[in-house]
Length: 54
Image: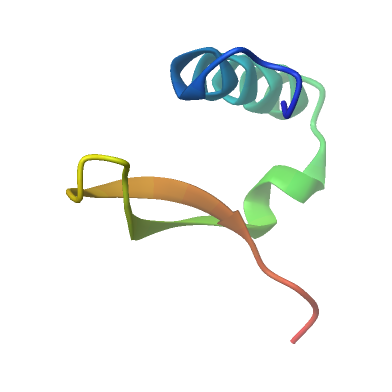
């Protein structure tokens, strides 16, 4: 994702990757949560965040 030219491309890449992982039955996607984080414009946007072990 870091090789994407901008945030929109990175977002689209991640969305498609999550979709493929869900279709394959990959359990890692369930550990991702959305938190509101500030964007470049100062507004808060829901952003996928992966948590570590509890």
